[in-house]
Each structure stands twice: as C-alpha cells, then as structure tokens.
Length: 237
Image (cartoon, rainbow, N blue to C red; front, side):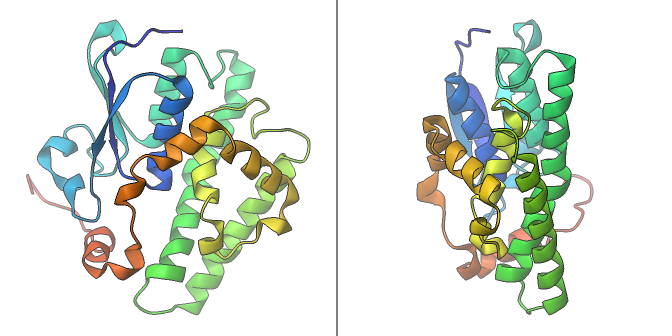
C-alpha cells in the first residue's frame, strides 16, 4: 500500500465513465480533488485539458506523486483504473492469472458494454430523428451483453471473482439500464450483483460526486450540439 499525501487531481464530469474513477478513489480512501470538465459546454477542448487528455474526453487524472515521486497524467478510464490499482495494490491483483481475469472484463467493458450502451442511449433518447433499426440494433446488443454478465455471475459474486476494478468499470454503465431499454428482472444474477455493488458505501459516494451538475441532456440542445457534432480539430484549434 502506497501512502498518498498530495491529492490526486481528477478531471471529471458525472457520467458512467467519470464514475469509474470517483468510485475507485473513494474505495482507496486516498485524497483527491475534483476538477470539473463540463463536457456540455465544451470545456474538454480547452488547451490545458488537451495536454493531459489528447482525446478530449474525461476522465483524466494528474497524480503529483507518480513514479519516482514525480507528477504523471493518465487519460482513458481503463488505464487510470489499472494505474491506481497497481500503485495502491488494491482491487487489481498482482498474481498474473487473477490479473488476466480482471483485464478481460475491464476490456470487455471498454470495448463492448460502454460503447454499445452509449449508442443505445443516443438513439433511444438523443437522436433528433427516431431510427427504428438503430434503436433495435443497440438495444438488442445491450441485452446480449447483459446476458453475458448474467451467465458470468451465475457462479461468482463479482465479474473476476473478487471485487475489482472490472466491477467498478461496469456498474456505471448498468446503472441507467432503463434508458437502455432493459429490465434487470430478466437477469437475476446481474440484478443481484448490481444491488450488491451499488450498496457499497464507496460506490454510493463515488456516484454522488457532482450530482448537482447533472441535468437532463435530452432537454439541452446546445449541449447536444457540442457532444454529438464533433469532428477532427485541425492544428491548435
């Protein structure tokens, strides 16, 4: 376990990806300072933020006590979880076989559950025109992924055996299951896991960070233009 004296800077907005890191930091009980990045107002394009998050996406962190006690910045939520897990020696096992189990489900979330649930949210709630094919396509794919989790959790309490960063990565993307057109009663093992993870005090605290900033994006057309109309920015733009 590494002692942390200076607070970790968390660049954050209250979304499923942001929750991953606020949950982890709460679970670790290490000092951290939230730097809000209002993605609906375009703050993710500020040059100062792009220096630490070149993909103009939050979350990102700056750890002033990085390797060699020198500052380090990390972007991409999965990479941040792995970094914090290695540094503090918790929720990310050192044993290689156990770590592979965690990595598989972490990458499954990064490459599957998150993107597919995000598309389901978009076409079900935010698309200016209802596209039945897209709604059905992504709603069905999220349903399939929930089924994968449900089977996985039939014989274990958590996705990788013990509670880990894999569970932290997934919980925020299951939290808005109704907006994805899903019913957890159809997935009893997933529902048990969902209720168990959400009941953890650190998860509750992590998901509450920045709640005062949350609003219904479906009613904010200007924010939608910022979030859904992005193209490549050339040069220093």
